[in-house]
Length: 497
Ligand SMILES: *Cc1c(COP(=O)(O)O)cnc(C)c1O
Image (spheres, helix red, strand yellow):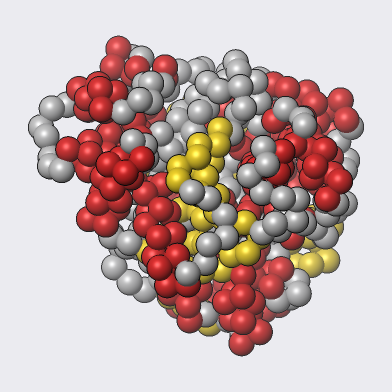
């Protein structure tokens, strides 16, 4: 299998090259040249395997240049109880009749990004070795909170790599900020930007494609790679847990092989839901992909009208990892939906860069309407949903997951659809303790973050994750705050080149 660029279909590279490069030279994203399929027999067999083996099985279909031993080296290191607090890795909680919470937050940073970022460093270092790169890999990350910490944990002290993370100064939760500022490791750096997530991401993208910076790196034996969800090595691990969830539901007798399910995903950069789309097109029977947004509802409008328009107010919400107005991975979906039309994609994403807006063709609009449902809710509805679920099912969920539940409830009310449904639960409730506690108790309390964690532990039956329990006692290592215009200089300075 080879990988093409969404902005130039004649680009043709191996998975090892796609993973080390992160983004294609002309700015497009790498996509596999076809989507491999799974037969019913294979899906059934996957149900009998442990998570790491399910992952290896699926990776073998995408990373065809990796040997079996290389793939197992990656999966065995990433998906073990050394890094995850549950044996199942991705734990399925039965919430209520026909609804399953796919808990993707039992990894070291308590958010679903761990599912991909625990394995990406192994993919990257293995890929670099395969293509005889003896350069130091420099990882730049723009984060709305969870990616940054998960990438730092994944890469810390991994030989031959160095990682630098940028986050919006006022766009992450106090807990997320503290997690990043206290990061351990000799090869890590963390810096706040005076701006929002899109400022961070645009800055990182610009530095990636800056030829002066690239030349300086090359002259110093270094090269950039990306740990953001634009890297294919981030996306393919996410496909695994949707396949895995389906195989498990079949194995447990919750559904029959071939039955359709809905998948609901609280969405920001469109990576997680794109992985569900790939799982569907591999052969997992999916009825609707339900895309849930917070009040930054650019994707809801897009799914409903075919017009993507980022010229709108940006809101800071209680689900900050979804406070995004440019969803990068949408480019991959549209590339597939236009029949791999690189010209059209270049035109649309050129317009997005210059005017902040583009409109897709009627054919794509019809496909969007057929495969997706888009909905959104505001902070009050998010908190009310956390409260409701707690009251009804004694289940505590985080703010992002609550957005998904609310949009799913709206979908059910609007359509009457009773198809069994998997909801991606993307973070531990402890990670967003202020909003979660306010929702549970029905009012704000002025105790500190750590006391809030303790209070949630009293109310819910979910134990406090070890990584968060330790946080109070860790020394702060990083306190830089810069203007977005200074980002490039900062990177060069930190790398000492
Ligand atoms: C990153 C994140 C999301 C959004 O996922 P995308 O892949 O960017 O759409 C949702 N919830 C949480 C908790 C996250 O960390």
